[in-house]
Structure formats: C-alpha cells, structure tokens
Length: 73
Image (cartoon, rainbow, N blue to C red):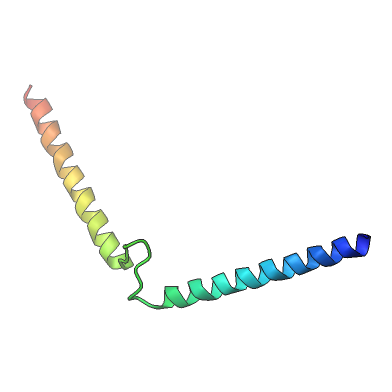
C-alpha cells in the first residue's frame, strides 16, 4: 500500500517535471524569435525607453506650465 502511493507520487512528479520542461523549451524558443508577439505587444528596450522619455518630458512641460499659471495668480 505504501509503495503504491510512493510510486504514484513519483510518476506524477515525473509527469509534472516533463510538462515543466516542455513549457520551458517553448518559452525559450519563443523568446529567441523577435517576430513572435506575446499578448500583441513586442517592443524592444530602446523603443520603450524613448516612449518613457517622451511621456516624462510631457509631464515636466505640463508641470512647468501649471507652475507659471499659479505664479501669475
């Protein structure tokens, strides 16, 4: 009885390990290909940095404009 439970546990563990390995291989292959869009979003780090800089510059400009309006009042 005890050996059966251990065998079932080890077989289940082996199946889960195999499944995790297959998922790992799929993720590794998909991360190496730039043409795969996961969730419809694929941008490299430079594009993301450029967009973040534009947003930051826009926020700074808005803050300067608001400060100048507050200083006039």
